[in-house]
Image 1 (cartoon, rainbow, N blue to C red):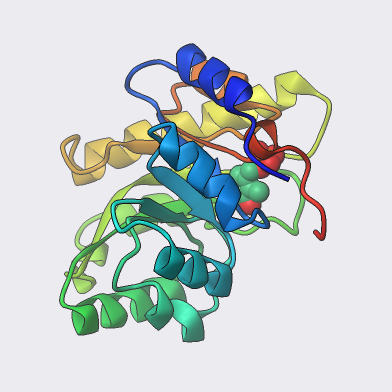
Image 2 (image 1 turned 90 degrees about the vertical axis):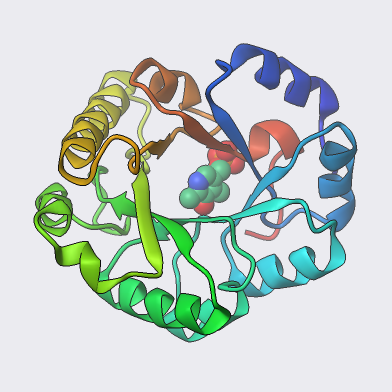
Length: 222
Ligand SMILES: *Cc1c(COP(=O)(O)O)cnc(C)c1O
């Protein structure tokens, strides 16, 4: 499996200029990433820590690595020194350990709060109310080495596009509330939309889309 450069260029051209394309390279070999890198791409997303760390070690240092998968807190140390943006902060324990590891690495880490907007119980994330609670007065001051720069969400796995769009709209409105609470300069990232629904996410204001199979083909071994 390797990168589909035609699909990549088509998507690049279709996305608005302010939208960051996170190429989700999970399960893809290093060569597939190198092909997109050679075409000028720098933002890549991974969902497993071991794979993220191995690829980061093997690939050029100017790649911006996005952690998008469920986080086991005992693995945070492996990506804290270099990760560009953590999309998948889905519980307080992750904030707590990320803070500790960011301090240890001597840096500040940008994070997104993952919000549970889908109908499936299996999907991770804070509830919208929990997000509002976190954004309210001072809660996030407890994490001086972290900067909450936005929200991330995944829509339900359904063919009902109007439901998907409604879920994205809900996340977008929560994003606006978070901006009001934490400041529009700090909160700038709305990460939503994947291969099958990024158009709906864009229509609702996404400025980071996380696209895998459209760029790399279907994943095997998942
Ligand atoms: C795998 C994954 C994606 C990309 O999914 P595609 O359907 O292949 O585009 C996006 N976000 C998250 C969190 C993922 O795990």
